[in-house]
Image (cartoon, rainbow, N blue to C red):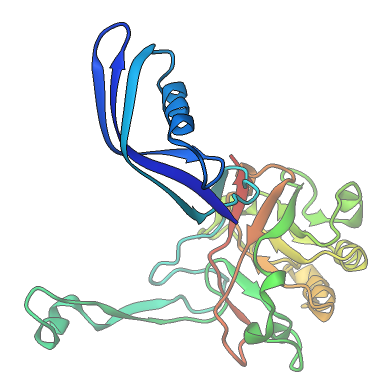
Length: 297
């Protein structure tokens, strides 16, 4: 489909005084056979409300070009950061080693490899997958489960999402607490307020978690992903005796888990999208993610 435009030079004199000269001026025209008089009328209409006494056109050229059909406008959005910063030596989960960040090649060491004034840093990090804000794939719990490389993007990126407000309530988020939330096909983010203790000795003490019946409810109703802003989605106190029902039920159903989220208080209860994508690493179950929400502005 073509749109047609007329290009011309113009000399215009106004009734109320003054004049205008234009070179290679362009206006839209309805068809390729438009007359010079019709082009002049369009120019005069564009100059309104200035009254035109005389308009003289020259070097007139009519041409076609592909029409640009605008697609549907996407409403303006903003991003909300939901991940913790990973720093050297950070303790994410009690008993697991913190990351070690170093340089394989520093800026200074690289200078003799490149042209004068050109330098790079090639960095190295040693860490366990359970560092910072991270995502669990089924392989984290089950030897034959899908690993990070096997997770489809449509289970990780731009998911419609909801927030379950559980901060200040009982430690365990139960099925009853989820009853009024539409979870089918959505990322369900449990806002417990546990992140206020991040990187302190209190982070793992009596931490919030998702109960067995809460996890089963999310499986039964088809949640796409489940996240929590606490040290673990399961109860890790001694009273739990090492059982991990939330991990077991969700990952058996192929539902990824994101732990150690933060800033969930900044999100609306629904109407936004959630993304948490790890690298495609084969034979790996858990890895840090940059989790964020896309929220209507």
